[in-house]
Length: 273
Ligand SMILES: *C/C=C(C)/C=C/C=C(C)/C=C/C1=C(C)CCCC1(C)C
Image 1 (tube, helix red, strand yellow):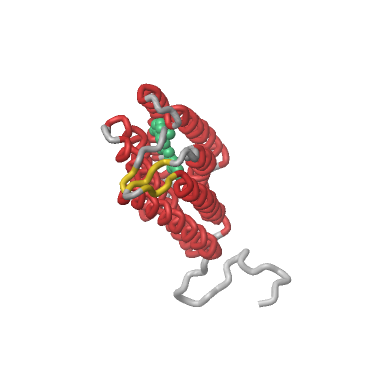
Image 2: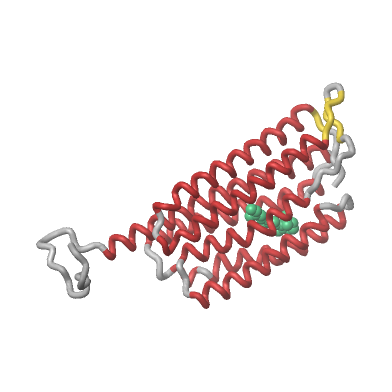
């Protein structure tokens, strides 16, 4: 899409939102790396991947921010595009890399069997690749009809992902404790709400007569959705991993009341106590 002329406020809003998003991504990466050690080995991978996803996104937001600044010149009281190409591919490359990572986080934290995990992940990752790949030609087109058609095509794999998250994973959840099921319900709602933002922001330029507000809504919408879908999502993943770690520790700890009689098998020969 060609960049429109923007008012001071419109340009500044996008500038500040992009800057805020860079901060959120890197702060989340630092948090997940620091908090990793409090997580049991079984669920640590999920938190490591959460850190990786926000780290990758943080890098891409630095590039988007730089691109935004380079693409406009202040002329009188308005910002005018100076012919530098604003590269939408940073977002799409970011999605191609981070959306599969988000799915891996979820499957890793649930601790499903290998075959269950593999089947779910294969389908989710293929659908995510199709969704992003189909959205891109529409995103870079300045023809609204092309944008609309690819938007609709990209929505089909999107609906499939929602279906898998919503219905297919319910079976796996029956084996989880009540507190974890609540968190899982939250993450499912967050995913639906945040992911629903993307197609809406994508379609916004079709419904607005002003291309300036279309561009602003697009940039702000994608950035807000990314903060929810990566940082917020990662925090819920972290909470699930911590609850599961605690549950595992409680299960393997000797009962606190009564004399501590070693149970058969708890005393390993040759280990000094
Ligand atoms: C961290 C990045 C995430 C979670 C990106 C998610 C992106 C989407 C859910 C994009 C969806 C789109 C459609 C459903 C239709 C076609 C246009 C897209 C690619 C914006």
